[in-house]
Length: 321
Image (tube, rainbow, N blue to C red; front, side, top):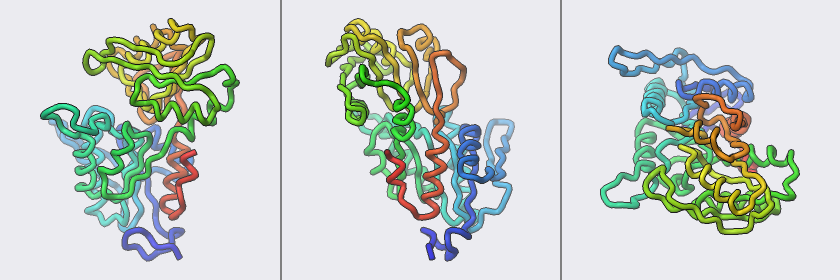
């Protein structure tokens, strides 16, 4: 007999598993539920005239394994809604609460790199735990060490399980993988190792946040097809500048794989007017508009498998490859 991680004494076949969608991720949550083989639970969000939220879980969750699916991209109401749902489930005697956060917001502020700034990722970790979450499930954190900010289990899924099968469809014999900045070298190196290719680094010098002053290409790209690898794309300024720099060095073509399509500001305009051939992203964040250059792969199957393995007390290690 398998016992739940909290207080339930039922075997896992008998434990109720309930999936709920936050307002920020309804489509992704629906896809996850479809792959999981269940329907989303009933939850609605009431709003007062001043915008204050009151999530209402409209079915019993007593003793259940509850999974709240919500990415925490801006506005901050998305995070607040998730916290309120967690608190509501805790007060309704849920057996075990997992926050499924495909895109973990504020992850870029993971250290104190200048005086008098917050370590926002750590603060978010503290708030989630204070709200009553028992487990976190996320994908491609901006910095791996954020897992250590939590004192609860963290399932840190990798988009490699999505992008690798996608790339296997193509002939990559002339391809090199590139990191758009020094911080992403580990991620790009892993792709180069898996596909037996070379690695290129774009050394980025910034004027300020979201503004690149200069990019220097380190490595040989002449006549090669280049694939840039990054965990997220925000204004797309770095990717577009990197594509320009790579093509100036003789690259044949430039594509990009980015897990989280933040795509703020003039991102869509930047991408559409850039020399990037294609940008491939996942659906951890819904696109605000369409673009002929952007292709979306779903992360729903990966999260559905992780959810099932979690509540059945099975390893999720196989999901990392």
